[in-house]
Image (cartoon, rainbow, N blue to C red; front, side, top):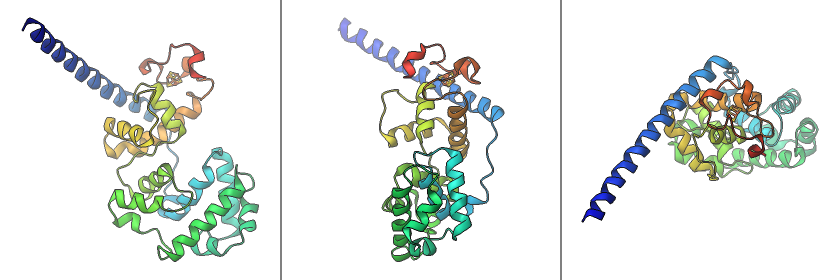
Length: 248
Ligand code: SF4
């Protein structure tokens, strides 16, 4: 009996400890966002987000490619041909390749963009307007049925263009959220990481969190050599004082 009573007490203590830890994490997550909002500006994407197809094409170009080269490749393509499903479905793939040459894996991306455009024309009636009307999970599934479109790309289109309550996790968001102790370090599954970060912030901040975590990852929390001493959130980060070797 004594053993059971002790165990129950211990369980209660464990529970209240984990509730307290969760409250601390939620408060810390909120403070991190505040600091980031005051430290970085968010680029104005209002022009491009009006057109989900352009966002989709740009996101495919951006895979394993720097922001600078993504922008250059997208501008090259836009200057040569209207970025619409119909024109890209009809374009010679070598013509698309020419425009995307400055982006990584440009041959593969050109084939994917052409194939995807053909499917949008033939199966979706030439438009991605379903993202506005379908519920989140259905719209996500439909986007992910397209070649080259994984969960991150689908979530970017859904959040940026349709304002759906989903938080895209790219490589920066994943790295930064783990180092900040917001997501368990050993979590590998895309949907679990996304769901955990979504839990910590209200949906109206998902766009800000996505953009600002990317900015933090690019400026300070770099993959190989994070600049912890200069980092704007180092007083809120449990990884700030760890040995540099843990980041490799
Ligand atoms: S303190 Fe270091 S590990 Fe933490 S977010 Fe900043 S750069 Fe990344």
